[in-house]
Amino acid sequence: MVDSFNIYCDESCHLEHDQHDVMVLGALSCPTDKARKIAADLRGIKNEHGLPAGLELKWTKVSGAKADLYLHLVDYFFTQPDLRFRGLVASPKSQLVHQSFGQDHDTWYYKMYFELLKVLLDDPSLTYRIYLDIKDTRSARKEAKLRDVLCTNMRDFQGERVQLQAVASHEVEQVQLADLFIGALGYANRGLSSSAAKLEVIATIERHTGRSLRRSTPLSWRKFNVFHWHPQEA
Image 1 (tube, one colour):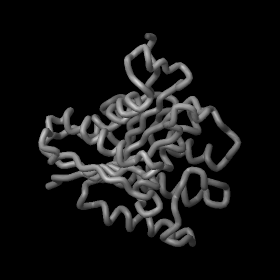
Image 2 (cartoon, rainbow, N blue to C red):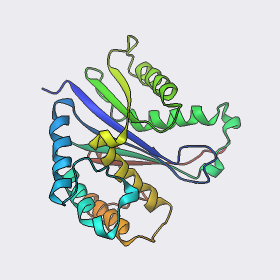
Image 3 (cartoon, helix red, strand yellow):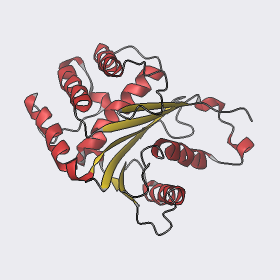
């Protein structure tokens, strides 16, 4: 019986003044007792394609020469019953007016992460281990704040059900797979088209889901769930 889930998170273009109008957050989930096997499977897929197990998988590395590897990873995800993914696409960032809602960019960022994760933390009887990709020196503060918000929402006032840890993505295969999916979401929703290999990865994801990455999925779609968030008028 499953009593704990691991959730691996990654993010793209989350800073306030990074000149990107689309922020993407993503979370890959699996039962804790299946995490080691899944990581081993992902390393094995790298080996099958003649690459070292320690190679870091990243959306930015998707190219014609490595297209088969990344298509294999997408197919693996959709045939692996223990994996699920949820992505949040927030746009356009240029229309954010934080002061009208009594918040700053950091507060909005935490709200978006809460919107991403609350759907995955859907059973108060379970324990959730959340792994955040280390991106900057603010990681520790982000980790503590996000954990407080999630614990409060789950009424986990003793902090027993939600555990957060910052990790380096090159050491955690599941974070790398999350990076692949948020990269695809970002690429599709920025309307980019310069890489045929990346477009093929996106097309493969859409073939599995039967839905464009530019659209939200129903909340009931547990395997690959996408939520598009847009700013409200003040």
